[in-house]
Image (cartoon, rainbow, N blue to C red; front, side):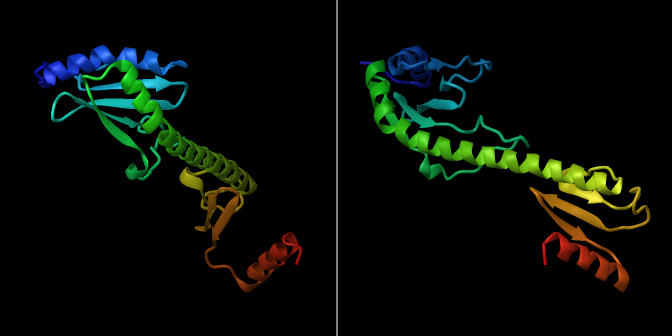
Amino acid sequence: MTTWTRETSEARLSELAPKIARSLGDGWRREHNTNPDVTHYIALTHGEHERIGLHVAYPYGRVEISGSISHLRDAKDEAPHYRSEDNPRITATLDKTPEQIAADMTRKILPGYRVVLAAVLDRIAKANAHLSATAATTAKVAEAIGAEPGKDGLVDFYCSAAFPEDSSNAKCSGDRVALSLVDLNVTETCALLAKLKLCRGK
């Protein structure tokens, strides 16, 4: 009978991981670990996005298995938030065979994890599309007044070709623009509103 310690648990997990990946089939593999100090955790990966973490659990002699999204980032290098309770996790004894653990993962982890993963990837795609639209809108507004596009969708009128002394600004978000106009006279205001009515077909 195995006496489970941290060291024996980590050694057993290291032995099991590639065999579990092979038992899962369909291109699953053990991820190469670039940090020799991390011996309690091994990741199995599949395709471009799927990643399952295997952690030595306490009491020793068990492994905790859960899906991971921590490796995913949007275009701003931010990890999307999700409710951890939506991501299934299980534990298994390290006495089990690789085939038994792979079967547990296929039945209890992968279906729910793939639902969470799909939702996260959809959120990332929408965030990236919004960032791209914001950048395009910001560039267009800046070009219209001869200004430099600012960060996070901001266009300052000050020092622009059209309004070099104006402290107004435009804040772009997606394909929308919020104008913060400073100190217009009544003639400018009426002219601006007339143009806006014309653009909106009023």
